[in-house]
Amino acid sequence: MASEWIPVSERLPEEDCLVLWYCPDERWPVTSGRFCRPHHVDVGGDLAVPFSEGRYTHWVPLPEPPAQ
Image (cartoon, rainbow, N blue to C red; front, side, top):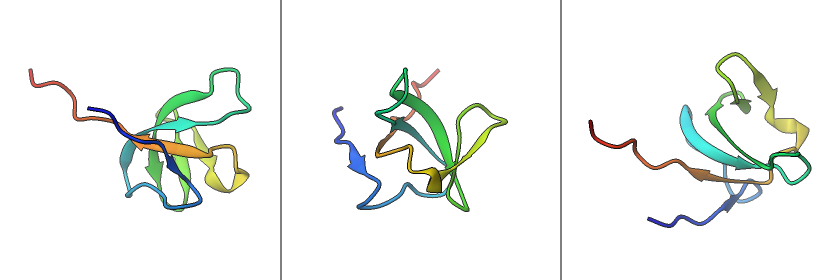
C-alpha cells in the first residue's frame, strides 16, 4: 500500500494519529510520532515538540499494524 506524503501546509493529521514525519534539516529526516493537540508531535512517548517550530514539512499516516 503506497501513500503519498501530505504537506503540512495542506492539512494536519487527525488527533492522536500515528504518522511518519519528514523533517529535511535533521540527520534522520524521517521519524515516526503521534500528532497531539494543540499542534504538538510526540516523538518518543515523553517528548512533545511544538509543531509551530516548522521543522516538519510533510507527513503520511502509518498503516495498521499486522494482525497477530
